[in-house]
Length: 475
Image: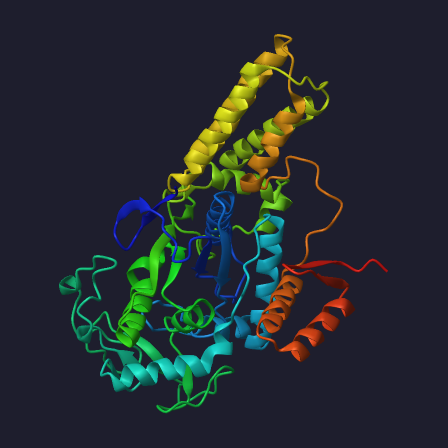
C-alpha cells in the first residue's frame, strides 16, 4: 500500500487509484521562455520519483506534462508582460521560436537526468479553442465579468474558492488595481486578457470578447480534461502553485462541471540558494549546464534531490553537490568491488539482509515517497557488505547485483553498466504514442502514416497480439 500526502486534505492517506492497475497523472510543466534552472528541475525529478515508485508497486502510469507557451505573465497576479513575448524581444526571435528552443533544451535536461518521459506534452497554444469554450461555459453560468483589460473569474460566486489553500481572503485589500481597470476582488483572476490597443502581440486570437490571449490558469483545466478525462488520480506541481495556480484550476473545473478535478494533489518544495528562490537578478540562476561545466554529472544533482524529502526545501550549495557526488561515487565503487568478486551461492545471513533491505527500501518509498530513508537503506547495506568482504565472508555476488538493479529502477543513477541500446528520444516516443492511439481508435490510415514517419526517422514498430514495441531500424 502506498501512502501519499494530499494537499487537498492536508493529510497522509492510502493511495487508491480510480482504476485498480492504472494511475493517471497530470503535472504542471515549464513556461518555456528561458532555460529551466535546477530549482525547476527538482519538480521534474519529483514527478519522476512518483512515477517510478508507482511503477515498482505494479501500477501502469499514464502521465501528461503541459508546456506553457502563452499566457503566463511576469506577475502571477495577471499583470506585466507575457513571458513568451518578453523572451522573444530579448532574443530577437519569434515567440514560437523561443518556445521551441527552450522546450528542446528542457527535454534535453530531462534526458540527462534520466527522467522518464511523459506520455504527452501538450502545449497551451494547441488548446486555445478549448480554453475559449471553457470561458464561454463559465460565462453562461454567471462566474465571469469583463473589465477593460480582460475577462475575469468572479471568486465571490464560488464559495469554496479559499478551501484548497486555506486562504484568508478577508485579509486581502479590496479594490486591487490591475494594469488596466479594476478587479472586483483581489482573488479574481484573468480568464482572457485583451491585447493592448497600442501594440500587436505575436500570440493573439479572436474570441467572443475581443482579440487577446488566455490567462495562465485555464490551460491546465482543458488539457487535463481532454487527455485524462477528469477527475483523474494525481495532479502535481510546485508548492508555489497551491495558493494561486492550482486554486484557480480547481475553481474553474468545479464551477464548470460540479466535480473535483483530481483526487490527489501533490506538491514538491523548492531548491533554494541562501534560502531564497533562484533568480537571474540575484545571480542565483543555476542551470544543468552550469553543473556540468563545474565538473559534476547531472546524476550527482539527481542524488542530491533524492537525499531530501520532496516536501522539504533543499538549500543548494556547491559543497552539498560535492557531497552528493562523493556519495554516488561510493555506490559506484561498491558495485565495482562486488563485480570483481567470485559468486557464492549461499550465505544465508546476507541473503536475508538482501531481502530485508529491499523490503525496507520499498516501505520507505511507499510512505509518501520517503527517498532519504530509502537511500539510507542502500548506504547501510553497502557498509554491512563491505565489512563482510573485509572479514572474508562468501558473497552472493549475483544476488547483490540483482538487488542494485532493483534499486536502479528508482535511483536511475547509472550505477550499473548501461545496455548498448540508446534511450529513445522524447519526440520519437510521442510519435509512437500517437500511432498507438490512432491504432486503438481504428484510424488505420493515420496509424500507417505515423509508422512510416517513424521508420523514416530511424525506428521500426513491431506489433504483436498484446503490445507494440519500438526499436531502431536494423538495416
